[in-house]
Every structure is written in C-alpha cells, then in structure tokens.
Length: 187
Image (cartoon, rainbow, N blue to C red; front, top):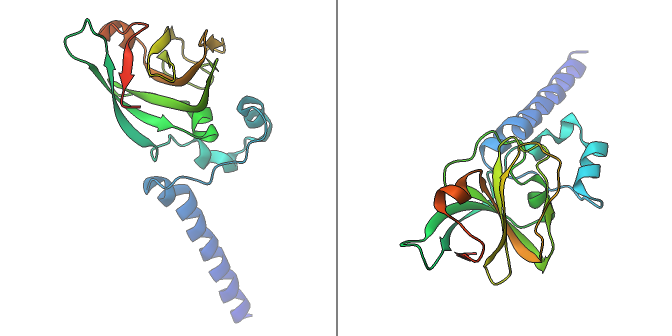
C-alpha cells in the first residue's frame, strides 16, 4: 500500500511540474508554443476549436524577430524610424497584435506575405486602435488606413496588391506625416 501511495505521489508531482513548465516557465523563457496546424480561415478555426488549453497560443508573441525600419519621404529632413515585430508565418500573422493592451511609441508589427496580392485586415480581438500601412513588394506605401477602431469587424482592404502590411499605433501616420508613395527601408 505504501509503494502504491509513493508511486501515485510521484505521478501527481510530475504532472504538477509539467504544468508549471508549460503554463509558467515556457512563456517566461520566451519559448514559442508549437504552432497549430490550421487548415481553414483563422477566424472560424478559433471560434470552433479555441479552448482554455490553447491559452499559451494567445500569449503576445514575444519571440518574434524584431527589425528597425525607416520610412523615407524625399520632402522630409530625416527618415521616420520604426521598430517592428515581424510576423512571417500564417499563425504569427493570424495572431498579429490581438489581445495586446498597448503598443510602445514608434513600434508596430510588420506582416510579411509570400506574394503580392490584395490584402484585408480587421480588428477582431485587437484592443488598441491602429494605423495600417499597405506596402508593395518594391517597398512603397500604396494605401494607408488611418485610425482603425479597436475590436471593429469592418474589413480594411488594401485596395491594390501588396506584399507587406505594417500596423502601428493610431495617429502614427498623422504625427509623422506618412503618405502614400513614401518608401519603407529595412524590410
């Protein structure tokens, strides 16, 4: 009986240690969870399959590559510097800036797509207002959507083919006088 109790105690303690690692240490160590295999549009997939067990998948993506971009306009004295997290994979792009409650000044997210085509974004589960810069494969800003409203489900289309989208805090475009035709360097 004593051996059975000891074995059960070891099993329970091992389970607690695994849970502690999965739900506490792994996010602290900035180790990404294994990406989900998504076969359908992310919005329907999450509504159908999202559970409390998926909690780690929704932690802000602190392991993403970070780049410094310059937005250049020939009429400006100096380029506008912007620090971005780079979302390259389907899962990274699907999460984007969702569930964040703040975004540092002059910071944003760069969405990188494999090919140039018309893109459309929405603000579902995005708790901060954003400006969206739609950028072509030759790094010129083709369209700007100012002041996208937090949690708004309205589609925000690029209006022409683009390969990159940059999300920044709302009013970033107005504050820095960013315009269609400006060039983005550092992608």
